[in-house]
Structure formats: C-alpha cells, structure tokens
Amino acid sequence: MDLGLNGAVALVTGAKGNIGQAVCSALRAEGVQVIATDMAVGAPEAGLEWHKLDVTNEQDWQRVIAAVRAKYGRLDILVNNAGIAPTDRIDTMPLADFRRAFDINVAGVFLGTQVASALLAESGTKREGGSAIINIASGAADKPAAFNACYCATKAAVSMFTRATALEFSTLGMPVRVNAVHPGAVASDMMDSIVARYVELTGRNKDELKAAINTGHPMGRMVEPAEVADAVVFLASRAARYTHAGALHVDGGQANT
Ligand SMILES: NC(=O)c1ccc[n+]([C@@H]2O[C@H](COP(=O)([O-])OP(=O)(O)OC[C@H]3O[C@@H](n4cnc5c(N)ncnc54)[C@H](O)[C@@H]3O)[C@@H](O)[C@H]2O)c1
Image 1 (cartoon, helix red, strand yellow):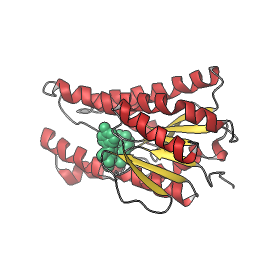
Image 2: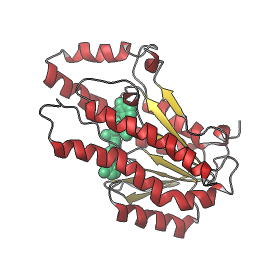
Image 3: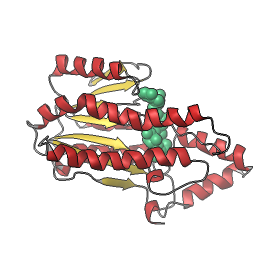
Image 4: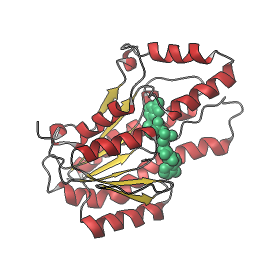
C-alpha cells in the first residue's frame, strides 16, 4: 500500500520522549521530513531537524511554525504528543501541579492546533485526504484510574477536543483531518515513573503491580512505543484519507475490559 507520505513535512512535540522518538523514526522511515520539538533540542540527522518548543508557550509555536513555513512552505502532519502524567492523591496534590498538567496536556494541544491550522489547511489542499493532526490521548481518557484523576481528566479533554476540532474544521471547509491515538500503558520511562509513584502511594509490590498492568491488557502486555508510532503513521497517511474525528485504541483490547 502506498502510504503517500514520502516528501511530507511533520512536526512532532515531545520528540525526546519514548513515544516521540518512536514517532519521529517511523515517520522518517516513510520519507517524511520531521521537525522534532521538545523543551530542549536534540542532534539533527538526515530528515530530522530540531527546534526548542515549549507547547505551553504561544511565541514558541509562532516562531517554529513561521520557520517551517519559511523553509518548507508546508506542514502536512502535526503530532501533538508532549504530555506529563502527574500521579498523586487528590487531597494533597498541589493546585499548581494540576494546572500545569492541563496547561501542557490540553492547552498545549489547543495552541498547536490554533497556530498551525492555517499552514496545515493550505498544505491540505495539495494532498488526498488533506493534512493531518494526530493527538496522543490515552486509554486514561476512557478508563478512570485512582491517583490519576488529573491525568485522566486532561486526556478526556484531549479526546473531546480532537473530535470537536475535526467537526469544526470540516464545517469551515478546512482540509485537515483530526484524530487521536489512545495507547494503553506503554513500556516507557513515563510508565516506570507512574509505577514508582503508585508504589509510594499504595505500598504495593512493584513487580506485582507491573504484572497487573501487563495482564490488564487482554493481549497480555504493555504497548511498545513503536506500536503507537505505527498508528500515528497510519492516521497521517493516505490510507486514513477518510478517517476523521476518530480515536484509535492501541492497547491490546484494554479499553473493552
Ligand atoms: N507512557 C505511557 O504509558 C503513555 C500511555 C498513553 C499515553 N501517553 C501519552 O503519550 C505522550 C508521550 O508520552 P511518553 O511516554 O513518550 O512520555 P515521556 O515523558 O517519555 O515524553 C514526554 C515528552 O514531552 C516533553 N514535554 C513535557 N512538557 C513539555 C512542554 N511543556 N513542551 C514541550 N515538550 C514537553 C518532555 O520533555 C518529554 O520529552 C504523552 O502525551 C503521554 O501522556 C503515554
């Protein structure tokens, strides 16, 4: 199948993290020019250029999108991936931590969508199926978890923001498809931190907890970052040209448990 991605230009936020790195690699493997962004830059490679972009900072977004427009004249794919996962008790969680999570996980997606939308729409007129925004939500958008009320709420917000944006863009005649990926628990540094914090908060045994997370996925294990990245590639591609306002679960069946 021709994914139609060769020569496309993509911007990925949170590109230094486990999922972000996998997304950048998977897109590059399809011939996409990747603009990797994070709180600090990494080493440039063929097909991969870095920009510092704090997703909560409107000026950062404007500077980076202007640079992409000046250099490439197009943006075909935006992957809103940056996120944090505070794990805490509601009765002791600082309000500042709660607000910070909404700022990064939700306002960051809003800002990226807002600032990039004109360039995405222009580029979308030149591609079958238009250009694509892919938001990395989470299974936490659909299934509540103790000590993750804030994180779950941010991801539920991302899920609804994704679907409402998709309808709005179509209503405005903008050729930009908007979809979300909902990964289950991903084998990653973020998941290691969540597990460590759960152990602190509950006194549960770490290995038992990890085993329970694995078996919580009907297919028997956590998700690999590359499996999330493959879903992103699909949603960005010509193969998903009529997939819009969707939520693609990459979780070994977990959302149905
Ligand atoms: N790891 C999981 O189990 C899992 C499961 C479902 C969804 N997700 C989501 O996937 C995304 C990536 O997660 P990950 O596992 O790769 O986490 P990660 O912690 O490895 O990576 C997150 C990246 O986001 C960056 N970041 C944080 N704040 C930022 C900001 N203000 N501006 C720009 N970048 C910022 C970090 O520097 C980091 O590189 C997140 O949105 C996360 O919520 C993760």
